[in-house]
Image (cartoon, rainbow, N blue to C red):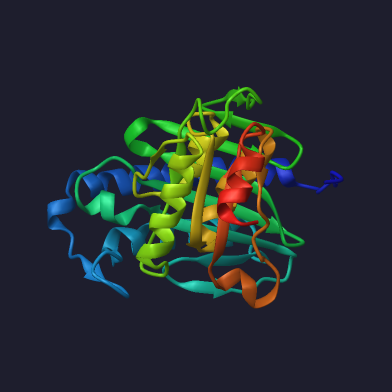
Length: 266
């Protein structure tokens, strides 16, 4: 990709980091008193939402609207609010709501920024682990301020791959991708948060992440992180109606691209 100079990008990254920290603190407070939350079901019993998701998204939206009122915002809970600036924030207030409401730490706050359909900022806060992943186009990726750089020596046979699945994907599809990964000499984990597993790819903890159907708010921040750490991702259809629909997601370190592209069929 030819790097473009985007005026004000560093300021938007700094704001995204500050908002992610504050949103993470609010979410963590809810997490510590999760027994008081009313849990609602979305499209199936495994797809849940709580007041915490909505309150955190409202906080994020308000902070961005205050500083950049012309920016658009797409959030999981409240959908797309178009903007006029050419920038669109794409947010998941709590990715991994199921782990969240069940008392597991594998959830995060995910904030991405699109410009000309390209993810140019990605910030993921993991409050239970006190970790903040941050990246911007051409500026590299960091974890708690430490630069992330992926090694080409890690592949599916000497490292672990993350996988994701949901009710949009048939059990046979999930079984097939697990079988192909294992037959190729790999192994896998699934922790309940696709965004957090993408951050782990950027950090080199996972060598790749594959999910046959995922939404923009789950993956775009992680995509920016992986790219800036030296990895590769399968493009997400961010233009037009594609932004609000699900698509196949694959991100990998440099040593796993060929294997995981074959398994994912891209």
